[in-house]
Length: 184
Image (cartoon, rainbow, N blue to C red; front, side, top):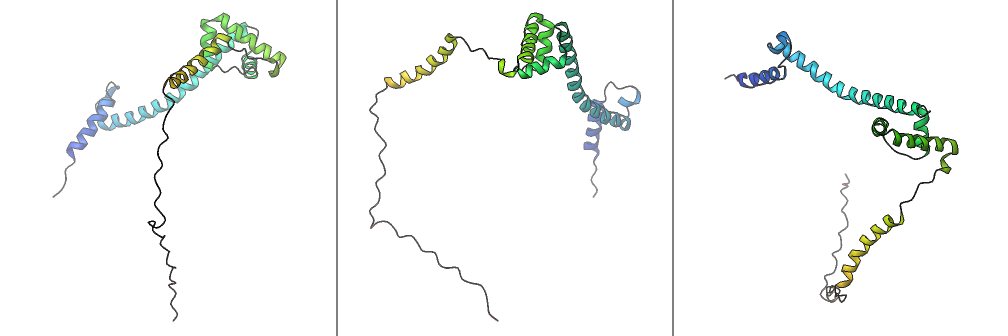
């Protein structure tokens, strides 16, 4: 008795034709041409998902460069200065700042210029105001206060009583391994 594969085959072909919906000419009607085009299309989409990342990075760099040129710097000088100053802002955010907040971008450029001029040791990271430093300490102190309110007389867990020496079973000795060498 032979097995007919008509149902799975038809389902597979329907799935491919559904993916090929909207393609030009016979590419959405005939299985063979549709399958070929769907395979190409899937490959193109995989490639283009990676291409998009490259193209977006190029766009961000072009925008940052335009903003840097307005502030009398080149893109490479700006990025070098930010690296020296330990400023870690990704290119996407830098490009958004360059477009939407020119004054903020100008201050970033000034930081980079200062870092290049004075070197990495001259940049001092500004500390947070004293009020912000105290706030986390208060939060940390609050749980301690709650613990202190509880009664301090906690009993230590009782240790299990050890069995007397007479009740302990002696450790079983291991028998020496027998040699399997036969002399003939």
